[in-house]
Image (tube, rainbow, N blue to C red; front, side, top):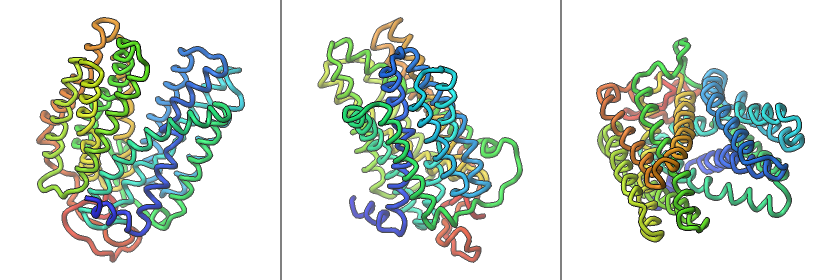
Length: 419
């Protein structure tokens, strides 16, 4: 199992790109908790903290596909690094100004969100040219999904350490400075500097003109909804047991399950169309969410949370392959960015729906939102099976530089960069 991942990491530039992207995404992965802690430290209410965090999240959802399209049109360095700097400056303004005047605080977090660089989409666009072989690219997608789980675990811990040692303002400044360094590491690498998207057909819809991509985005909106609802339902479950630490155990178990599932999924090669495989994985994901409605004792619930997480990372990793197969020529970064946006909007919707569900029917109802989200994601994939069965492009694996027009290509996988 480890040999396959080592094979990916030994590829030239692979470790640098993966590490730089994760570090560069640290500000976006920790922004919500950092904004809440800073707002509370400045004397703001929880309502205001939530509103500022929501403003950041919505701004990020708007900015990701727009910046992704800009990357496809103008290349990575000309977009990613300026965006990272502007985003960091937005958060620095928020940290220095505080909550007074409040409109300026909102403006600062909106600037930080809109300018968040699309490093996720950029990395996935680079993998085919860096790794070449189809099996390596698929394994890198799985490794990427697993690394996200690590980041979402380590990132908040780093914020809390910085807050404990200094202050929430320092945490905001340091995290975003680190993020700029991560983006800088990526854009100075040879693959990022030389990567060019394939020529694209001018169309105002961009990547969204692909029916298969729209079907996938519809499904992953509900996957995000399910995951977002679990974060609220977990708090309600912890409140029921009068022990705040229970929430941490549930979230840790969910992350551990996803990590294990992603590692196992990426360790083997899979035959057959990824669209069919994705339907099976999402079906298992939905099946894992449904037992959470039982809300048993803490030990059993922690086990169920781990089980519910097992198929999350494989679903995300498989979705990357499907995105690459269905993104119209020249829109690969934008397409990946739309997946990030849709998932995030779904998660926000899940948190919004789960709250009233707790009020109306208790904790079990809030976990029912997660189960319903998983089932809805599967229904979308089943209903759009014919659309998903027809990829946009003839697949190829790019084995040379994106600028090397004489580079070799093998049948079987699409890079999204060359015809």
